[in-house]
Image (cartoon, rainbow, N blue to C red; front, side):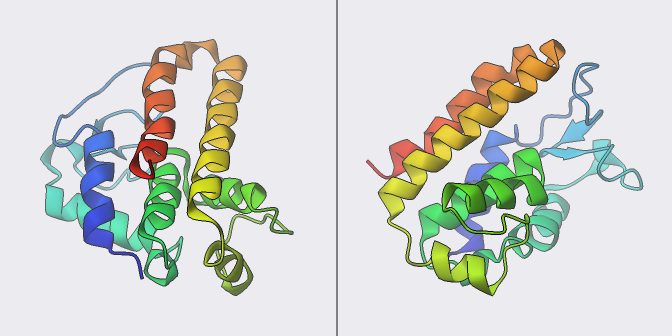
Length: 165
C-alpha cells in the first residue's frame, strides 16, 4: 500500500512549500503550501502551518483518491499530486481515462482501484504524463493568462516519469 508521508513530501515541494503568494493571475488567489484562499475561504492562508496543510491534503485529497488502497507508491503519488494541482475530480477522471475505465466519473471506487492496482507502473506513468500535458495545454489554450504556469506544470507532469526510470 502507498504511503502518504512519502507522497506529501514531494507534493509540498511541487506546491512551493511555505512560500506565501498572492499572484493576481493565480485563480486560487492567496496561496501557501499549495492551499488556496479560493478553495479554503475560511482559512487564514498566510498563517497556515505545514501540519495544517498536510492534514488538508490527507483528508481532502489523499483519502479521496484512495491513496492508502493503491498498491504502487508511484501511481498513488502521481494521482494524488495531479489531484492537488487540478482538483480531485479532474485528477481522478484523468487517471480513469488513462486506464480506459468506464465510466470515467472522477471518483476512485472499487472498480477504479481494481484496474489501478493491476496497471503496469511504467506504462501508466508515461501515459498519465501525456494526459496531464494535454490537459495543461488545453488550460492555456482556453486562458492565455495561465501561460506563465505552463513550464512549471509540464515539469511537474514529467517529474513522475523520472521516478520510474
